[in-house]
Length: 214
Image (tube, one colour):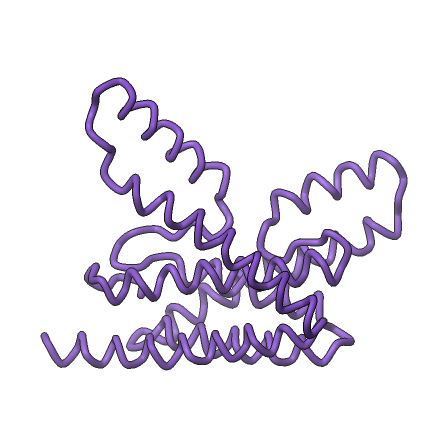
């Protein structure tokens, strides 16, 4: 996905990745009592509140999540460089493995934070269009300013529809994760792992087709 030409196929793959992030965050939010594994702004706010109020068990829960997310970013960045031929496929395969391992239970929260760090660091572009996996506030600001431009008689800004679709896919993924968690509990992560594995195969196939056309 990174550094590839923008095509309808790469755009669809990118949106599927956004949904995967939303799905995983939805499961984590419910399973771990409002702890996110992709939305670190929320965790940072919660950590600050917990420190100020002296809620040390909550601090001990949130601080490692933030640290493991950063570790995942480091790992994801390395994987992106190491897998130069098929970076997206490699990253998604690693994410699939981490999600499947998280479904086992004992280290679930840490593995999820690590996996989402990998995803956010490495799968950061699709056809030269940045993915907003975590920067939801900025996405909504762009949607709002685009609406303001249109109401002022100006044309829709370039990429406005994509920004709105990114947000919708993230919200839809979170909703799907909620339904899966209600039915399966933590085993809903196996659904996410299967989805990541399918996306890895799709990314590999897309890369091969793109290379064949060159």
